[in-house]
Image (cartoon, rainbow, N blue to C red; front, side, top):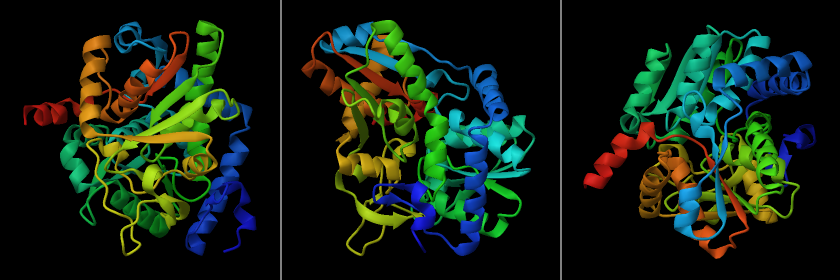
Amino acid sequence: MSHEQFDEGYFGEFGGSFIPPELQEVMNYLSAQFYKYKEDPEFNEELRYYLREYVGRENPLTFAQQITDAWGGAKVYLKREDLNHTGAHKINNVVGQILLAKRMGVKRVIAETGAGQHGVATATACAMFKMECVIYMGSEDMRRQALNVFRMELLGATVVAVDKGQGRLKDAVDEALNDLVQNYQNTFYLLGSAVGPHPFPSMVKHFQSIISEESKRQILEKEGRLPDAVIACVGGGSNAIGAFAHYLDESSVRLIGVEPEQAPTLTEGVPSIIHGFKCLVLLDEQGNPKPTYSIAAGLDYPGIGPEHSHLKVSGRAEYYAVSNEEVLAAFQELSRTEGIIPALESAHAVAYAKKLAPTMGKDQIIIINLSGRGDKDVEQVFHMLKK
């Protein structure tokens, strides 16, 4: 497969498109449509309309006074993706992609989900745009996120349990890609993470970059200057790449991604190909993707977005892992201190910020991307704390 053809799909050595020829044709068409419509004034007007009237953007950049006082150091701001309709950043990308699917005349949408937030967002948009919706979800994740499974079904989606492998996010992606190969004539694969073959990583970044577009404007209004650090959790990488996007060229801003200790892709991964693209992957002795585990189902992926792989290798962004204990403590602390219950995924970013803030001056600023709210996790946390 010649790389020249897919140059735009590369971030340094990572990215590209390593897929069967029939699927490559689908990706080429999707790519052409995306690049055409992303500059289209009518498309962007409609996107802005739904982000405002349906998602509820722009959401606040909240100064966390209590947590700032408690940690004693940098000023802490929270970018409130938890306040979006459906409770997380996932809806930003879903609305963008569903408007694209609508213009492509597709009536059937498929998606993969781990924590269920992307599945819920996809089912929500499909209900609104009257599209058939099929969601692939690992059986283990369905057990952990039973409430989200019911939500998706309530919204009219068919949720397909994936028993293969570990019954987690990677396995759900495998099945969704198989479906696309078989049904590409009439099906749109609405990928939720900044992963997969080109153009998905660029497309997801484009629709999620609204996060940093807003936070950059908001912090300049509030503080008259840029933050010293932006912190986001990383699983597949969509909320983090959206939170980083408009700061990539601002060398004074540290970009920090936080991952689970049991799935430390960026800390320990090696370059490899997974799901049709090249990125850092956790491999076992046999060279296969390693089983991963995280208490946050949305971070349970053995690979990572290609742009994050590039940001890590190039040194533009830093990536750290935190333990389950630190995450659970952060989940409870933000709830008690600020009256905001974060998603377990987002609590990873909070956990690292807690370590970083005290090492910084009181005139310095951290933005934590609060990628989602914790409603979906309270039952799981309840049982974990009871143990």
